[in-house]
Amino acid sequence: MTAVSFSFAACAKKEEKKPEPALESEKAAPPAAAQKKTQPLFIIERSKNANVVHYDAQLTAAGEIDPNEPVIAYWVMLAKDGRREKLSWIEKKKAYGFTIKPDPSVNNYKMTLVAVPQGQITVKKDGDTIRAELVIDGSPAVLEKIYINASDGLLGPKVHYIELHGKDIKTGEKRFQKILKK
Image (tube, rainbow, N blue to C red; front, side):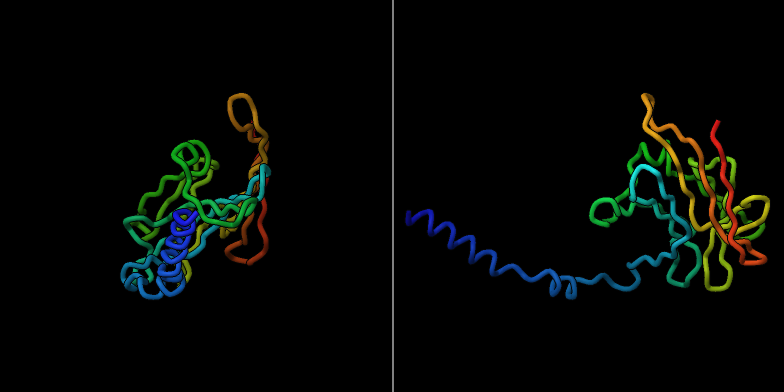
């Protein structure tokens, strides 16, 4: 009994010596230069569950689009606990990944999503804001959200339709387009 009590007491003392997470994070905060700034661009919602994929512009310390990695994508697990997760390799290749290339003629980036290959997105700086622009229902718009309606199939998800949601660049009116998959 004494050995068990001693081991338990030793563990308890060891736990008491651990620094509290809040204090430790204050002491170990990374320098400002190491912190990456991001600005939200748009999200992808799905019919499967409440989890969403976020696409953010990554910025330099000067507030410009980071030429090394202009856009990042990640899950926000709203159906679980709201934590942030990286996209898996297969998710990047088959569903939520993208390619992005600089467009030096207009000092912005051209982005193509795996989920919507027919629509090229322009990622650009407009004043202090970084935004994603896409033609929605025939008009240039700021992309806010993509909704994917799909069901599980034998060979993977079967997409029924995709909705594009945004705001008209000129008028500010809501823009919407539904793309039926064949």
